[in-house]
Image (cartoon, rainbow, N blue to C red):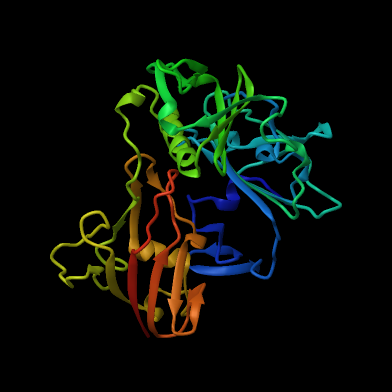
Length: 380
């Protein structure tokens, strides 16, 4: 399935289509005009990998080899995020073609989802950014239905450059603002490889190794001693790519969880969102300074859609924003919010009672929001 056209998710009018709670919702004004339910669909997988790619302005024929899984993929979801300064929607799209037949070109705007099965897998894609003024951020999730990984039948001896036995502290700035270096374990340490920051196209994580796609070297595999080292390295490298003038020597280990900044009230005219003290004088609260336990009251009739409160609405009612000391402002997906009631875990709230909201959310370094909990008193 390919989706193209800014109007699909347009935010400048009162008619748009959005995705939430397992369905596409056609919104008209303050109500739901129609919906297409996908909650009964399942895309089974045994292998899964997620990553981010930056399509540079005017970049053509970037080979998306499904984050290293090659032609084995049976599920592919791509989300495109455009620069906020790219205000002309006609310029906000990505061209793509299939690796096995590149002469046919297609396009998508906000998202692209493709599915397959064991006998009809998804070919690798070429991606191109026709916008010569702005980069495009591409978030990718790839799944494989089985154990097939023949594209990388030996993760240490591919036709690529590999370095093993690394720790995240082996990564240093070489020329601040221009390049980084990865050192070995000798005394004094010797350089294994230099990366020019402007030549790095993408960095993917899979267990305890990173896959770097680089214009100078091609594919480079960085194998770390532990998953923790790989997470720290992934977070560090992404931060340096976003902030190239920072000296890595000044960056400490990222062990700090993201911070939720709550709204003062659940909706403009709703009840206060309070912490464990119950005091309203300190609102708005946040999880960095005000504890992990919160509570509020929400009316189904006031805030529900046909007296149902979905996760996306709950997010709007409760959360102002989430930020991280390294990753900046972060978005949270519905799947990262867990609603628990007397009947167990639910995807929406349609019955009055007491519920609990927790989070399955991590930053790039793997720091989570474990322990954060909101007690929800749902009234009519």
